[in-house]
Length: 394
Ligand SMILES: [Zn+2]
Image 1: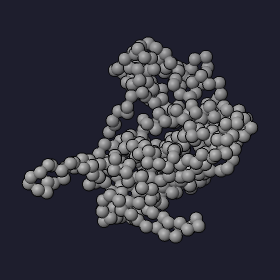
Image 2 (image 1 turned 135 degrees about the horizontal axis):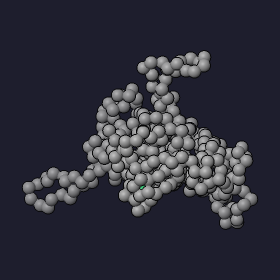
Image 3 (image 1 turned 180 degrees about the vertical axis):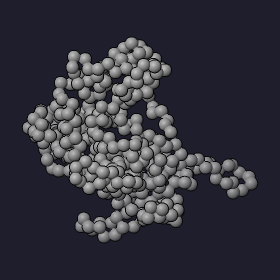
């Protein structure tokens, strides 16, 4: 839609899209078809007008704030507390809201955050990936309000594992999920990794000694190869499923005695040791899984359901998955990472009498080239994720 030649609009509507299904512009942002109309009956939200279908909608349409009485700031603070690792009950006490309201907001936010991650975490180029599993104890719902069956379930304390895949260069957390420590789960994690990576990108993989990773990696990064015929006559040999020649994979195997590490060995599974060491030497690293282990520490601190033996709500698998989704977006887009900060070309003078700013904060998503700024949690929650795949930008 061509811009009108009236005075330039001051409200930027390029991130919004028309939600009306019959409209030709439905779901497409940045097409210049929206006009901001001000705040109906003095409310906090602007009304937007679509000049294509002549429809109206509020600017928070489709976000978790739509149709809520509670103040935006309250919902953002509650979710920020959860993201920082305070339990659901503790957060509910701080803000004097019901624990179930907090849980409800988390569930709704998780849906938004999953869509947000799907939209931004795509076509990722990485050179290395570290994968790991973290042991957690999932307990059933809070004491007192559970039935007999659930009490039995709680006694069983079904063990579960949090699986992660992170890129050490950018600290980007590509995949986080919860499940058993089985081949099926390893396959699921590697499959999720391939969906996030750019086509043709095969990074160097480093994991612990779990053998199921090798099978899962071979499944996803293999190809059929026709072996050479040994004799002139006879049937052709059957094609074999082989790892791609570019695939590099090594394991860091730790042996324990009485919970103490007594030895670390490196096992090269796919590719050559020389190729792996050359790849790592570019960063000054050796074969290790230290980065993903450091991430596990962050998870223990920031996801209350894992970190402490407190009576937190939402300890089923679905509830934990919601908390992990919040952790993933918070880690990737909101929290600047100290080791990623960039020196400013010129120090910026700050207001007041503080010293000049010399560092530019940087999040893993910025380091991976997925976004150009540090997001606030409010910004993430207010972002209207378009229903269409992301358009390729320069
Ligand atoms: Zn429209």
